[in-house]
Amino acid sequence: MTAAAGQTGRKRFPPWLKKRLPAEGSTRCVREMLEDLGLTTVCQNARCPNIAECFSRKTATFMILGSLCTRNCSFCAVEHGDAEEPDPDEPRRVAEASVRLGLKHVVVTSVTRDDLPDGGAEHFAETIRQIRARLPHSTIEVLTPDFGGVERDIETVANARPTIYNHNVETVPRLYPELRPEADYERSLALLRHVKEHTEGIYTKSGIMVGCGETEEEVLEVMGRLRQVACDILTIGQYLRPSERHAPIQRFVHPNEFDRYKKHGLEMGFRAVASAPFVRSSYNAEATFLEAEQKQCGGTCT
Image (cartoon, rainbow, N blue to C red; front, top):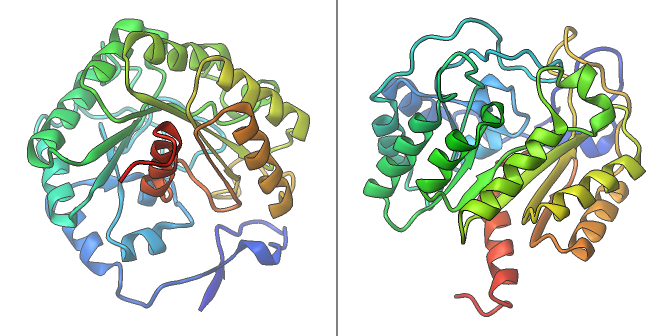
C-alpha cells in the first residue's frame, strides 16, 4: 500500500513522494502506550509523513510542554494558542515511555513557550535527567526552541548534557518574515554557536526544509553559515503543506538536488548530513547520530 504523504491542494505529487505504508495495526501499541502515559509526540501534532513508519519500528519523538505553541509559523501544523502550565510529572513519564519502547536514542522536542519565564528550559533539563536515570546508556537528543536568545536558558538545557542539542533554522533568511515571523535567523545561529562555546563534547544539529521558494544558492549559504558556528549535523527535507491554511508548496525538490546538498555539506565539514525528501529533524535520528560518531572517531568506533 502506498500514499502520497501530506498531499493537500491541487499539486500532483511526484513519484518520489509516494510512501509505502506499514501493515495496518503495526502502530497500535505505540499509540496505546502514549495514550496510557498521557504523552504527545511531534509525530502526531506536526502531522509527520513518517509517523506510521516510525511508530511501526517502535520509535517516537516526544513533545513536551503541552501541545499548543505560543508562536504561529505558517509552515507548522502544531496548533497555536494559550498553553497550559507545564506538567511537573511529564519528564518522568517521558522516561517511562522511553524504557517501555526500549529506546537507545531518545529524541525530545517541544512547542515554543514564550509565556514561561525560562521558556521551558528547566523542564527540558529535568526530562534529560529523568531519561538518563532510567536509561543511563542511551543517547539523548533535544530539539529546542530559541528561548528568545536568552543564554542562561540555553545553558540550562546544555548543562543537563544531552548528547545532541538540535535547533532548526528551518528556512533561508529571506523567507523568515513569511514563514517564521516571530523567529530570528541570527538568533538561531547564535544559539547554536553558544552551545558549542559553552559546553564541550555536545553535538549541535540543525535542519532546513526546502520547496518553500528558496534558491539552491540560498540553501548553500545557510549551510555555510551553520558551519561557521560549528554545527555538526544537518538535516534537509521537502516541505509538505499540512493544510490549505498553511504556506503553499512552491516546488518539489528532485532527489538529485538533495544528493547535491549532502555532497556539499560533507565537503563543508558537517559530520553527518541527512538530505532526502522525507527527511525530518528526528527521522532516523539514531542512524544520523551514529554516522556523525563514526566520522568523529575516524571510523574506528565500535
